[in-house]
Amino acid sequence: MKRNVDVFAHVKDILAALPNGGVLLTSRAMGRVNTMTIGWGTIGIEWGLPVFVAYVREGRFTRELIDKSGVFTVNVPMGDFDRRILAVAGTKSGRDVDKIAELGLTLEEPDVVSCPGIKELPLTLECRVVCRQKQDISALAELPRSRYYPQDVPSTNPSSNRDAHVAYYGEIVSAYVIE
Image 1: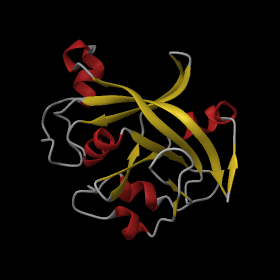
Image 2: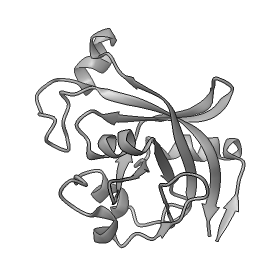
Image 3: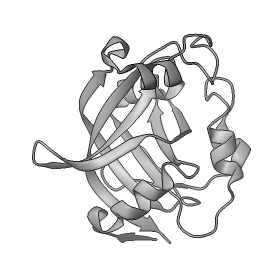
Image 4: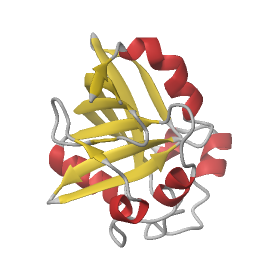
């Protein structure tokens, strides 16, 4: 069962979760569902639309799925939950492992987009990509460039830091809590 919510009534919850373990970014394409932990994201209004901006490194499997489907969901923890979900989803690649099955996650069929929510992280934002922008590492100030892009781990590794992030601006087309 889903309860529709006003996404802006939950901005504080979403922004608090990002640096404190993260949220899940879920994608579906090519017959696969994948989820990964993200600790970077923004929420607000762009072009008169409610948007969530997710940042995904170029080498990630999630990027391939979002590029194919043009949609994603953001799954935010509420209350007590198994923190192992975020740990596993943030350290394994969906190319090699079915994280949904390994973690025993419960998929919730979406309202608008083709990508499911995840019951265990119940606050769900369904997003349709309205803009995709590769970040220009050379345009960054020295501190974020040296901290997040030191160029010593190849993009084939889940901890890669050589490739740039792609910013996916997702129009929030539905927001709900899975109960």
